[in-house]
Image (cartoon, rainbow, N blue to C red):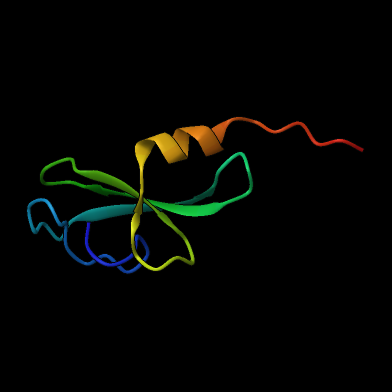
Length: 71
């Protein structure tokens, strides 16, 4: 995907403009945007307030586990 997840206008893989964007918070509290292309099914994760670089799949998985909060 191009630019940031929030601002992506075209898919970096195919140039498609039909994108779905989902804002969410990962298990460690990091706000992210998941972007999926309707044309080629390309997918990417971005920090919601980041510099536009995509997070790796491994980083998203590592951050997605539920964290128990201690009182």
